[in-house]
Length: 432
Image 1: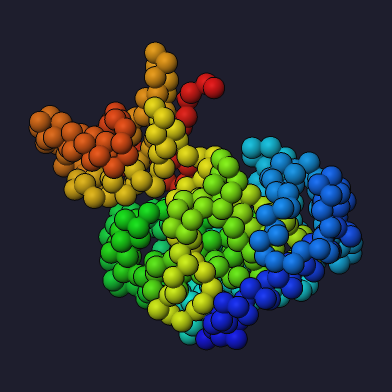
Image 2: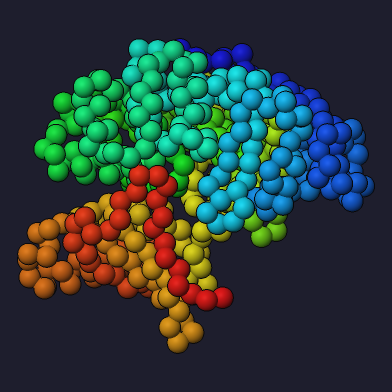
């Protein structure tokens, strides 16, 4: 096992004292070694050495993804390049890529924290872990790989794609733990059904899924269809990669590795702290990163803080699963709509398949949301009345859950795109 009890079960006062000491050191390091932060602090007349409480972090400026792009590739590194042993990067598909670096100590820390997440989810040295995340510049594959090796589990670094080969490997190599996006896990379940493979005949028992928002309803679907306990974990490349937070076997919130990250939950509009239990944007300050420390990084990810203690005994604060992203949230006729809300509603309606697509248009100066839903083949072979009944049920369910009317379009099974990486379910055709 890899439960670091001395840290993960610390009393709150000790956690916060450790965070403060590491925060003070980090602020002084970036002020001394990163011109971007030195100039930003000077512009606000902030003394990095004058921080006395954790709340003082609220006086410091935010770091945005655009700041990383503006300093491409190495402008935010806090160490000379000769001390950087690993470089990762975003895809850059929506602009200039963001680049992050790791020292040898950073790699060790990364391995430790991912091992914590794996251990919390119930993975042990006896497990065979199949990693179906992409390797390369994406942090997910390597991060989980390091954590598995640190834990002592056996690793199958199969990477993403080649779904039938993935399933063959699960059968032949006796895979017990699966690592991928939840949407790809769903695709694996679909292909298993097409191949006539009963998941109960596999050795799978646990899934570690992340890299995209997903609903509790999808968790239950994956549990049932793959015969596993599906757990959620959270990380982002700009901060470290996987290992920032993850669920334990209680599956009731993701424990933040607070000894390495200071997390704020802020209102994305006012940028002020929200009350515990309210939705806000995750803002992260790294406390131990050497090569690439970041101060108050705005993740754009939305979640709730769960301050109450967990039955597992860990004392770190928890966040809910991601509810979406502030920049992906849809505003339809003035109502905030998250794709995960629609996903949960659809899972509750018999006859629908767990695949959907959202299309947003503006007609006559009004927003129109169309929800394309895959349905069982039997629906299309039945009467038009059956289809209309299902459409009405979906429309009414979504209107009740979302507070806004939608148009529903039924499509046949396997019509909508399946995703091997992060799912992209929204097409917004509005021009602002």
